[in-house]
Amino acid sequence: MELVITSSTKTLQYWKQRPYLNEETKHLLSDVDVLIVPDEDLREFKTPLFPSNMMEIYDLLKEHFNVEAAINDKDYHELSLNSKKHRFGIYAVTLVVAPLFVTVLGNYISDKLKHEDPTDEIELEIILDNNSDHSKSIKYQGTAEDFKKVVDKVIELSKEKDEHRTDTAKSASTVHKKS
Amino acid sequence: MNIEQILRNPHLLYTKSHDNKAIFDYFVAKIKRHVERDEELLANSTAILQSIFKIQVDYTKVFELFSVQKYYSAWCLLERIEIAIKGVLWHYNFIEDEYYVLFIKEYVKKLQGLYPYKVFGSSEYIKKETRCSICDSIITLRNRCPHKKGELYMGEMCTYIITKSEMIGMSIVDEPFNKYSVMGVTKDEDDPYKYQNIDFLLSVIDHPFNQWNTESYKIFEPHSKFSVPRNEPCPCGSKLKYKKCCLPKPGVEMDHTQFIMKQPTMKTRGMKPTKVQKVTN
Image (cartoon, helix red, strand yellow):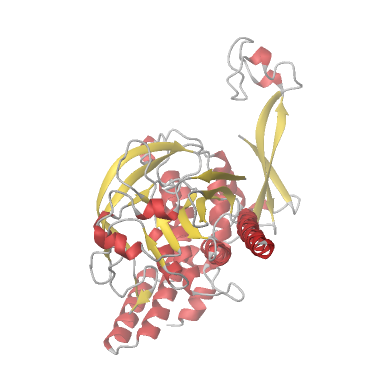
């Protein structure tokens, strides 16, 4: 199992302004909480690509969130790699919805793979956006059962950011009192 | 025709007690009648039973293919059975595995484990255009027809058909999604592999629904069995020189599979009830 957390400059705002997006699509993305983003760096291909069956996940997420994909409709293409690894894509999500998002995604993964080999590997990335210049990227590669570690980590990271904002608010009120 | 009785006794398929074509024709006619009467739920449930019957027939056919040494064809059929079972399980919850679908699922996996295949080709392609199999509409991310992939509509399962694609490469993998792409074989006639495990299984079971298991481990085969010079590759298959690999050991280390029958069969009559002869690979 691999769970890699890194800082990233690829925030929600970054993905909403990609050069291959037309104005109509940019307008669709303006208020989303969850953005499904493509893989832009797949080998030599310049075309942004999504993993197989991403449409199914898009439909599921639409039932719970204000979700969109960072791609024009006519440019949406899936890459089918056909090895046994299950690829679930890349998501940029706001901190507010992140805990619910990973829970919904985790339930989907569990249900989707219930008839598969439990040792099958899954791969995905979640980008946590806290409305600043940086985001946190969580890359996971491991079994469906171990995905709960991702859920725990996202909830932990969401709370960390919340605590930081609370402390900042307290400092501000303290400053206000002193003056 | 008592379909319930037929589906609950799939082992009779092996004895050719049924006219399979007549049963398939029965299902087709029944679905057609339900569709004409706009009875979608009944059409769908009949389609599921039809799929289950096909799974049972195909599973039996695997053993017919084994018996005429068409192992690669049997392998491809095992994969199609796997896919069909996924489709059935999506729509049907079994209480007691009354139609042996879960049994077949378990034993398809066991049979696949008996094959010597280690390396597969995995195709890579970009899906450029996808259409609905029910209404032929082009599917895009934000514009869809009302049909959902995997759901049944008047007895027909909705699938997404890739009508335009761009092949971009091929990978060599050990765990493929498409199992038919075995490296080194494309048809039974040019198959270079050996299938001792499957041949042995056929020699101890009476029919496809006998229950069995396997245990795999390493054993030492006596050096006297091999006439391999010391500086040649070791017979164990490690590619190391014999003198650096198994020659210093008590014997040549070989993979070994033991078959364990849950109940004795006619073919194992007289042998110990739980273990049968061993197969060294």
